[in-house]
Image (cartoon, rainbow, N blue to C red; front, side):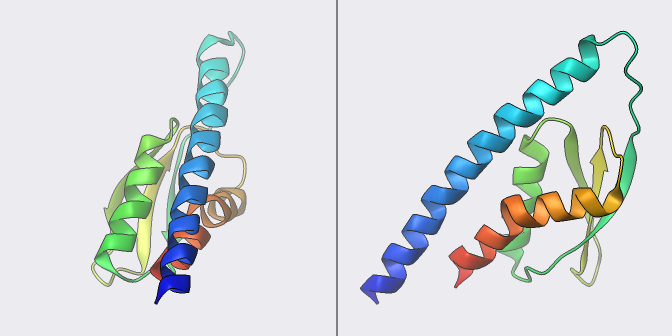
Length: 113
């Protein structure tokens, strides 16, 4: 039981650090986009395929996405397989999906065990 507790605690700590990193990076990106006179945003709504399944994990992921500047969670599909996310500037839907998966979802799955 104890190794599992420490593994999850370490994963929670990593998630906090990752969120702070993403918060700083995306805040800088949004500020640059807002202040640049020639920057053209490419907003989009992305259908993010969920791999987490519990309500707590989905809520955690949706909140982390919404707390990150430039992105907002909109809705979870009825079957809990898709999270719709509005993004301020999208060049590639695949890049957004990969970014969310690598930054947040993987570590949430690690915390779930």
